Amino acid sequence: MELYTIGKSLCSIYYKSLYKVEVIGTENIPKEGGVLLCSNHISNNDPPLVGVTCPRDISFMAKDELFNIPVLKTILRGIRAFPVKRGMSDRGALKKGLSLLKEGRVLGLFPEGTRSKTGEVGQGLAGAGFFALRSNAIIVPCAIIGPYKRFTRIKVIYGEPLDFEPIRAHKASPQEATDIIMNSIAELIRNNR
Image 1 (cartoon, rainbow, N blue to C red):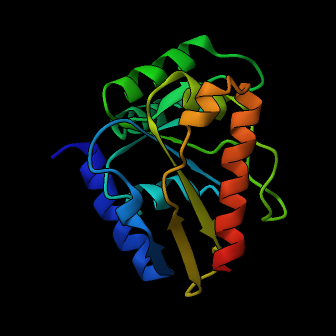
Image 2 (cartoon, rainbow, N blue to C red; image 1 turned 90 degrees about the vertical axis):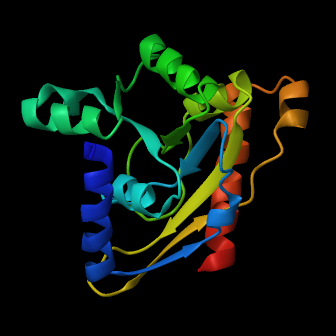
């Protein structure tokens, strides 16, 4: 049994015992093909929670510094995460993300790049838009509605895939594409609070 499957099982037990996890919209995740899954970011718990609730395996980008910690580096690679240098254009990470999408995998991103201190959706970085425009992946917005307090309800909502063909045809900029994704995440939050 591989590390991803073991980790998913253990995290599932952990989150279901600690929180009242409500998952909505898993039918919006295509069963096959490249998927760009973009979520808001409110806690360090977000990647494992999305990983547990998504019906498909996800490869997440993780900040480069985490791969400098020997044991954590092994775990992160075992759960299919890959490093990204923050604060600069990391061509290697962009190439890796596009490759995963082309292979028909699910790439998980938190476009804000860092956790929201207020719980509100912040400005997304252009990287999400880059992947959306440069691939033929299906873009699925995801909203996490917390807070992560013991025995409280946490919602994970997978929205309907976004129709990005007109946006690609319009030759939108990566930032404009990211803004569209972030607006759809904010709308999911508004409609499900």
